[in-house]
Image (tube, rainbow, N blue to C red; front, top):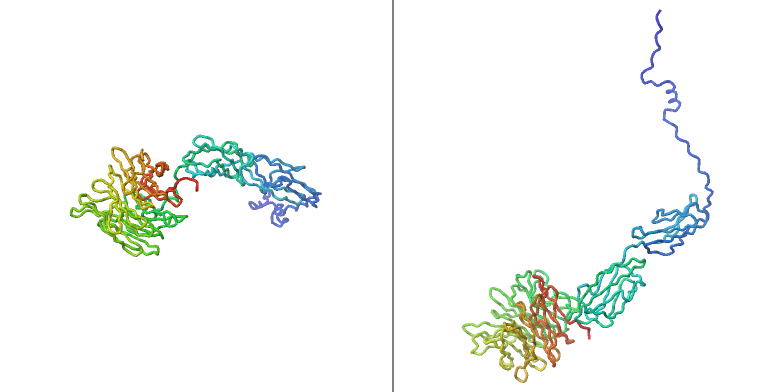
Length: 594
């Protein structure tokens, strides 16, 4: 008998019927969503009257340590928090106080607030600022600066980065030594606490070396202690640089030759000098005037390849500028500017070694050496202009026995507009002559020289008496001579001794007469750094006005670089040469104003 056949198998992967039934019952869309939770039960917190106040700190605080914080809470509060810049710094239980330790907190400005929560309600207090400061005060500026120069009567001032704690400023917080000796002084703290000022009981006077010491113990308002610097020093020199460096802008840059100095009708200094764009470059004439705030160009006469210059000014801002140019030959150009602005021009070829001068109302005159021709001795040509035009004055010639003739002229104009010329003749004697309106007259005997250095200089005093000065240097030493014409004869104005030798770049001296007619001299002395010595004569002899110098640089003066201002004080124009750079700098005595 055959076995019954097995039941048919369901298709592969066919789920059981119950699975189909489950899917059908669920609608075929997956698991059912979770039921919504019931709302939370009431908190039981009544937010009515909920308020929080930041009781402490009650005002902005600067600190480097602990800040005491206190909150006052009104109404019911389930949670009270202290916020820093909006973030929770701490949760505070009653009595809602907190000691915030800022010793390890980064420096900065922070905002503190209280926050109270009652159920879903939140309230915040007003914010208060806390500045965390672990940085000690530092020095921002010192005046006079370390290594600097100070004017007579200067105070000592120290500026700080933040206010100092007044109680930390003791009388000996800032002290002075003048030439190694302590001096009495009064110390003051500015109203904002950022500046200490030390006023010496007696004005600082030149020459002096001043050492300043800032003591330990100064702190800011939160006690950060200043780290004092090492003591620093400055000098009170006999002469101070004035008006800044005279500019030489454009292509013709800071490579200046010895300047010439004049004062205009308002007593403002004006200078003329040659300047080049390199130590060996072509020179141009530059002229500048100080206008109480800045240097402005005086006159622009153009021209390059300038070999020499001369310069003079008179009343009404009359200006005489002279430049010797190389134009395929040596040409001397003469530029005269009248008070009305009229510009008069002249020139002469092959007239060398120019010197310029101007009378009180003109004329503007130039003396220059015209070289010998056909065995004729060199002579001094006199050219010039006044407000009306060219001035004709005959040349000054040497005697027939003087084969070489005259050279190195110096020129002055007396109160009557008559030129006075001092020149060296072929015998090595200095000859001084005056034009009397009809002829040249020699004044006194010729003055013998030995080892003549540079150029002479001549001035005329208020009594019409010429004063002549020159310098000598040879194996026998260096000497300075000054003579005044008295009753037709030359009288030496006191001897000057211990005069050091000149550098080759500044062999001449400068001279001007003060209001009493006494000579004031300036000359350059060679050394590791060249410096300028200034002396003034009086009825009792010569007095040194000190040296003009600058550390690490040569200070050089030339002829016609010294004037005396309306207060009777000398003003100098020099070149300051450091390396290959040469700048023009004016100098005035370092003294208290009268």
